[in-house]
Amino acid sequence: MEKEKLNKVVEAAKMYYLLDYNQNEIAKQLGVSRPTVSRLLQTAKAEGIVQIKIVDSTIDVNQLASEIEKKFNIKKVIVTSVPQDDPHMIKNYLGEAAANYLDEIVKDGDIIGVTWGTTLYHVGMELKKKYVKDVKVVQLKGGVSHSEQNTYASEILHLFGNAYNTAPLHLPLPAIVDHVVVKRAMEADRHIKRILELGREANIAVFTTGPIKSESLLFQLGYFSDEDLQMLNPYAVGDICSHFFDKEGKICNESLDERTLGLELEELKKKEYSILVAGGHHKVDGIHGALKGNLVNVLVTDQFTARLLLDKQD
Image (cartoon, rainbow, N blue to C red; front, side, top):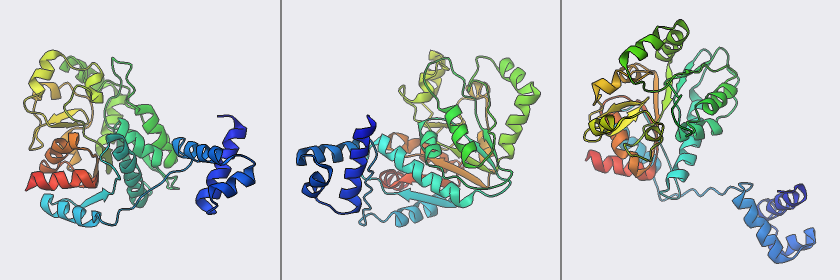
């Protein structure tokens, strides 16, 4: 957008939304027609210069959160009110809610482990700069793939590192390899070994769960053979750190799991904060399985997903 037009868009938006000018008054001030003002305001919304947030007081998100905490015996649930049951919109709101929670809990000396994907990217985008000392950020699972699909692994680590004033530690490996011997050889490298150990030492883990669908990011990265997919489909409800689990939160394919590089699911149970950020009807089974398996002690979700979780548990 040209700078002159951008200036007019911003000026019109300020007068309309902050100063309560009507469109005729703005037209006079800017020396343009009223329809032009209308187009400027539409542009302000389309370009994200103006962001409108609706707080629906009819939704008791605190009540939903409390019910999930009790039913699943979980330490903390954050339910954020989303205007529409839309996957992209849900990720935006969950990113903001998770970032605000991290701002509350992150302190000097913490080790924060993160995974990758679009949900975590939205969390990273919403993080506030926090002046803490000796914080480490480490990647919890491999992110190198055989595909051109973007996992956002590097961007997420950069955003987390920037927020907490630290140089993040990358895990420059695939999430899944073809043979166990390849995995063992990679893990034997002293640099890789140290990063994996740091992931186990992390007191905060931030991750999402992916659905078992062909269009899901993990399935587009070229890791799986047809045989792998056939073994997963009847049992798996989701994955965390590329470890696939069933409806009880237990590993559902040992042979595939033995070829997976990253934090083991059992390690999540030891974390001070094991934070699952996930929402949308396509992720309900995965979230439910993670809760049943005690892989999570903090859940960040939306009101639509929260209700589906409660209905499923009932």
